[in-house]
Amino acid sequence: QSALTQPASVSGSPGQSITISCSGTSSDVGGYNYVSWYQQHPGKAPKVMIYEVTNRPSGISNRFSGSKSGNTASLTISGLQTEDEADYYCSSYTTTSTLGYVFGTGTKVTVL
Amino acid sequence: EVQLVESGGGLVQPGGSLRLSCAASGFTFSYYWMSWVRQAPGKGLEWVANIKKDGSEKYYVDSVKGRFTISRDNAKNSLFLQMNSLRAEDTAVYYCARDEETRNFVNWGQGTLVTVSS
Image (tube, rainbow over all chains, first blue to last red):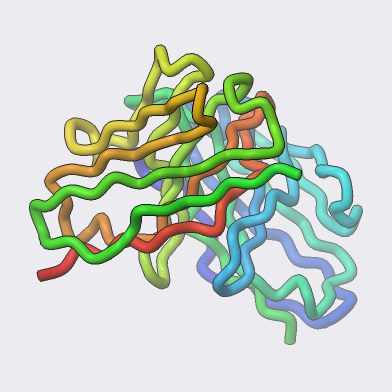
């Protein structure tokens, strides 16, 4: 099971929008609408920001949005704020050699 | 309030064994699949294993198959991970997490550190 592919880092200025991509295969991202995105600050447990490709859990800002096209999912953060600086991971349900989950390689978001 | 509290981590020699526990509270434990997710120091997240509500199905990432065993005790609201034949690359913080029906993890524990080193 190979990790989903994400850019190592993305940066933006406060107020700008950034997009993080997450590339997989037809056995994970492309095959199911079970893509989720997690935010992780240093020393903390991950926090789900998006689930089922586009859904936001209660309490998550509408500045966070998700989408998917083929085998690639994306997370967009609009109106970038300093507190958005963190690591972000995508995840997908997978049927590649098991029935479980695969995470992305992770993206460090820096607010300039 | 949902709470997940891991324990059992520590320092172990290569080839050794360790058993992690996760105590769950604040929800009906037997209604949910549960997972273990790990994170090596300075690295990304890796899903390790999950188990069905009644324990009848278990799935693992390839790298731990045959070495790790996930189990649960619904009467005691507890999740376990028996780790055998440990390797240096198993060094990580291990989180237990509740599987949602929407295939994501809303609730996580605080993690327990496993260090495999001689």
